[in-house]
Figure (cartoon, rainbow, N blue to C red):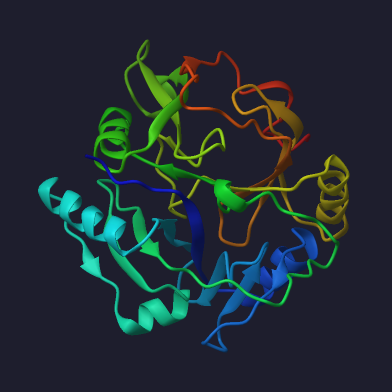
Length: 299
């Protein structure tokens, strides 16, 4: 038995500069403003869910946690039992935690690399339609919020933990020279891409430390024109472009990467691949992209 995660539900970001996030989330990414119980926090919507991105004031800039949706109380109870059997310590979310996230129940734990995960069920959704400032429609539904790439120190243990303990399914792999991350010359380390629903991957990991506790978060829209318009807003607001427009090999996403105020990147894209687990075969891609994605930002 493994945990039956349905999708990535939300991310919570600690920030020393909420004004920078207001500009970045609203005016660059084009996320809709939401409401929440704490007036000092920023809540952002991309669909009917009450908040997919929450930014809160802190003395550091980092990804505080990611939330992963389960079907119901029974699924969460089975997750508690499974984590306990696997030797993973978890804590029950308080009433205040659940109220802040607008969920019925949640538990929190860390992976072996100090990344904080939350499992929840019963998130609230709104009767009031989301109104993104630039009219973008985000691809969510059973694919969830998007995808997340986290830093790890051991790619072998990461693959074991995320598949055997958390129940993610391997969708694709890509190798890189070990010396890139301080390993001996001639060795390999692996980037792995893992899924739980039709989205090609909801979680991936990079075996390289990152002080922001996040490599990138991906948001997907349903039209290429909205990607292009967002790219123009990046230039207009003077935000650092981390990678130029390109199309990835593994999930076929046409996207660009931009540096967030949190120190990690946000990938903004469209045309992401959807897969059928019954027919999918995991393979190794030999390049990051078919074209584009200059990670020098086009400099």
